[in-house]
Length: 297
Image (tube, rainbow, N blue to C red; front, side):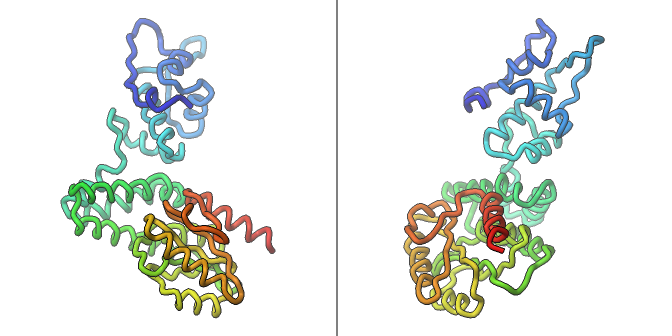
């Protein structure tokens, strides 16, 4: 993959020579085999053909290729990126979070709900959670910090996303009994949307889940561990100052019949052993837990 400066550079075609696949690849920095794959898998491109059967691209194809390349380089799953481009969102300033931020700034509840619902309807839950939801929440936090979005706007989005996650969780076939995955935030940590999305992903991966929510007191962690005998517990450290509270959960659950703990969130690296780190991909972490559970049977 080329560097980001080439990804973001506008592509212009002089028209002096036909846009063959080789030429399109040279102009956009996307290899020929990738262009063929995008055409075959996602119907992203529909180049015309010469009498000899060679592909010929136009400027609209170049715009789609450039936009797809930019989104994939930014971490989007190719299928989700192709859906964005197919919807016509492939201008020079592709911004998949702009609608949400503008709606939050205007306290437009209907528009926020439509944007969240539309995003989650476009692709697999894990892909949307990783490649749209989590970056969108980070972008929302920055907008709040700069005064673009008010506290009310931030709460409006958080409440809308939480309701949507609840609907998806309720629609997911649940496994009950056995040893569940116990999930919640540490005491004093209210940021739960990323962890809630992870709980949904774990449930969708086929594991029994008990989601405790936000700001779970240490005694409640102990009580749940004693009663439920979970296979493991998951908590988070979304801010630097939350690492101490997450460490306290790890220490508490290490007592008695020790419960393994995994940590998510931006500052998971500040929580020491014996906690394990989940990494920063909801999809990958949920798949890992499911694979470990399958191997333990």
